[in-house]
Length: 199
Image 1 (cartoon, rainbow, N blue to C red):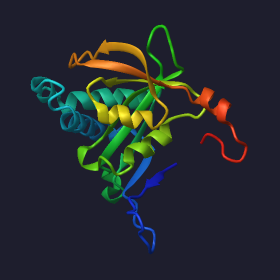
Image 2 (cartoon, rainbow, N blue to C red; image 1 turned 60 degrees about the horizontal axis):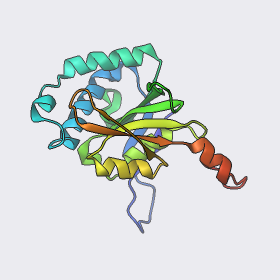
Image 3 (cartoon, helix red, strand yellow; image 1 turned 90 degrees about the horizontal axis):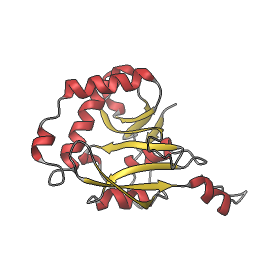
């Protein structure tokens, strides 16, 4: 299934514009472009937060091999936002990666491992589309986010995530991270309305 994303200005009239991106599951051939998006997103978002030598050390070939293994294993979920105008060579504009929670002890059923959008697509609604596609309405989900990244923390709060007090050092950059958890199953049970459900 493909979900199409649009950017519509307030008060716009007339026919529906062409889709700006498609949301779909990753395919094996996407691995190199996912790697490029991953590296460019880190470099665009984390300058000043992650040491320059760390950002400069990323290699597309090595990252591409990692994402190829992830896609081939089919043990996690990887959704992409792709440029529909790029044809068979779809350019990956953003992605979301989720799977079983890895923390011990486990405090949620699933974990959002990564959510990245190229910096020139920030504020377009693409990240929100990816979140809506990948989150499950009846499953608790955890994530780790850089403590000094207020933009990301504010974004996740809009989807019901809240810090639970846990902290750690991100292993590549050694920057401080905090854990956030969304418990939609509990929220849904408390606020269920048969006319307007949680999702």
